[in-house]
Length: 323
Image (cartoon, rainbow, N blue to C red; front, side, top):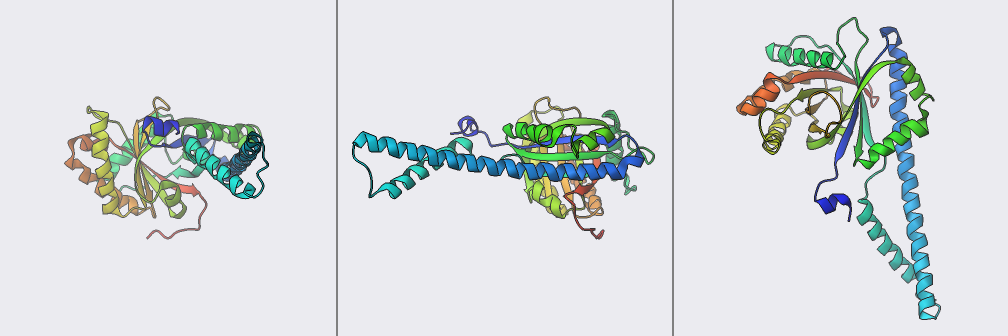
């Protein structure tokens, strides 16, 4: 039994996100190259860690089953010959089941990652202007004013299952890639500032985020705070609203995230909307207005929500038409 099943809580999906920007606009091309290399290396090392862990667990199961068979043979004082293979299989399967119960079968390392660059869209009506204006103010509060003269703002997102994989992610970046080694070392040389936050996935409508981003143009992120209402009641209102948002817009993936306790600045909640094209942001903003049927969501999202639109740079993909 894992700690999650013991506490009767779901295994959390956690997003580890970093807002960052290069020191100057002239470094953008080299900067984006190091970012894409970083994501690819982290995912590659995650697969290596997961593979090594599976191998070590399998070897442990085999070793323990052999030891138990040997101990049982000595206890009976008679060599077990005819049923050796069958007995070994029984022990092996028993240990495997026991292992899975304790480890929960959680994949090691990241389960997916993305990189997006903030885009300043053209005004598409009053609703968009309000939400996008709030979004620019929000980024400025965090130290990232978005203008056509400043270097662009980026967001890196790494997804993991369970808190222990935050340790694995840290080990991969610090020890396997190396703080001063390429590509991480090259990225550090070019970066100006960065802000980190961690969030738990509350609900996902549609395709899982880590799969949806492979076919997406980008994502529209709505940042907001809880109004004067109990957390349980607010989350209960959010889930059907997001499901309805996904249905109205036919977006590939719409997910709700809540900041892990005290881990990061800024708004506590956010909704990540994966968009197949930039034009889908229009239908999203129109659909967001329907949230006004709930006074709490009207206040938190429609009136005070902060919209940030990003074009995805990673996973790398072929150019898409703006249909």
